[in-house]
Length: 179
Image 1 (tube, one colour):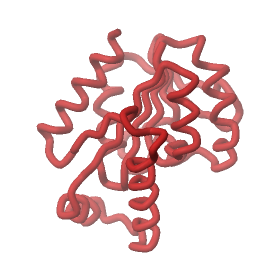
Image 2: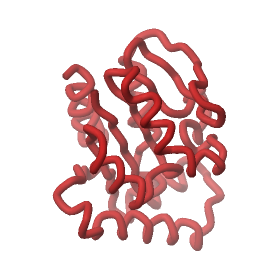
Image 3: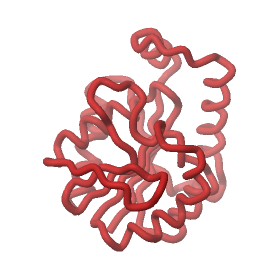
């Protein structure tokens, strides 16, 4: 039983990767095992958040900020019920919660990185309205996670600049889901 978590700066390909992974998991059932936690269930795999087709910002981005303080309770409650739980996105990708997760549960934490040129190209392509100030804050948050002494050696940092790299990350995560 593993909790898989992945995060990264905006436009690092988190949601795209997640959509590609869940497309391989079979039939889906929308569930809400705890108030404020809409999820998608794929047999013995629970995905936090929902990923409607055609929406750029889905998953945990749509979950209430009020859920952040309940994240640990949610994982503790749901982890025994599922072979795997998948958490993607910015909402719960905080050093304090990642440290707790890797210290208390069988988990794999991926940090997706992307170079600045590709990041800029993706922002233009998806025509988002995220301000440079907000983006700078997200970059700092991920940088702080990557340099967190308590997390060193516990994160799987993966470059995601191309379709080939994304395909390789997807393959790695799907292999973990089969274990």
